[in-house]
Length: 345
Length: 258
Image (cartoon, rainbow over all chains, first blue to last red):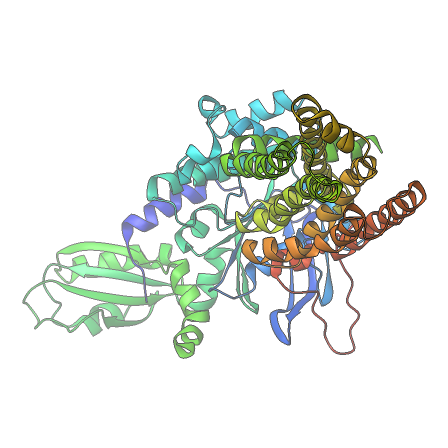
């Protein structure tokens, strides 16, 4: 369940460094209050409340049938809620102002939904006309350039690869310069290279100040891209920044690897005030034999790591590594919905 | 208003472009009229000089009726695909997330089918009449030229096409399978054809008054059908396959069917 990969941690830090956490005083782009949707007596979404700040990249996670797409469709005014309310781009979701909301948002469904017999440009210009946009040709060209599809502008949409179709669909979503963009499984079915390209495009949306509501199954994707995530399973299970969720669900720990198993690990670790507890990560090797791993429960990694290093050196141990054991978003997800899904099978 | 016209115009342009590039649609829209043209034309041209007047009348009735079916079946097939087809290929949902209203979308789709269908109907009749006037015996040519069904058919072509389109769109907006939509749409387009058939075969005499009355009635039915289709076109049903859900004791409001 634990994911203490230093490589993952490094990537995560790189991605997190470019993240701009939304300021507290930024007005909400989406506000959802007690939202419920029932289909034929079965609740697809049950009493869900959350808000998304303007400019935030918000991840909406959950297993199949968790109500993610239904929530997106309600917020995009495609279907009506059974109960509850929502505000999108400052406009209450309801029949009176649905067209106004649609003018200010964009939705990229899981399927790109391009007209196969029309060229990429024709597809985009059609939508530009539906939005009633001025400078249609220029905006189409700009949107295609933004996703790196300018050189395929006159190709039939049906001749594009799946990754390029996703890009074209994303370009279509950029046409009306939306305040809020809903991306429903944008990398579903894409190979790693194409998915990586889409990640770059989503990061570009953040730079443009677009609020992104991203539903995905790919937890590493959410971890890399999202400021905050919500985990759904019909009702909302949890919401917060990935780091905060990890802290809430898991204790902070240090992973220690030494070249030779310690003779008295209890004496080395037990006397350190910064260490609250310790255990061998696997079946301990006999003292003095091969390498051994230990997991130390600590409250503050920055304080504990130097103290542990000093204690190990003083005990004559050959330290191979000391690193914070990071729990991934996948650990959080599995902790919250894994048992439920396993039970359902 | 201008925004609505522009959006409906966008739908018309897109639909016509798709028709042009879909070989199956072009083939169907070409072969069917040709078949309905060849049979009646051959039947008329094959009338021997001195044939009894009953034979002449029967063949003229038949020949003027069959081409009328072109303006029913072609739009029926095209409109049946119009909504459910988009839903199947995943293009409907992105369109429904734009500010387009259902009236704009439906008007655009209907107009895009109506224009080629009506034009095709008139073309078939024009070609048929031209051939008979040029190639048939003078007696047969005069019989076709003076048949009371001819002006009646010209009046009914656009009205039957409009009915077939609205029936097709209504069915297309409510079913989830293209094949079912096309079969039901063909059946749904038949009732007014039956009425036209009674007149074409002189079961009821196609006088000016009767034609005008029937045309007025069919026009009214077409307008009513337009309104019914607009009501049947429900965003939620199209997206999810079901109508709005409801919690007992809670009000449900419909979103975005403007």
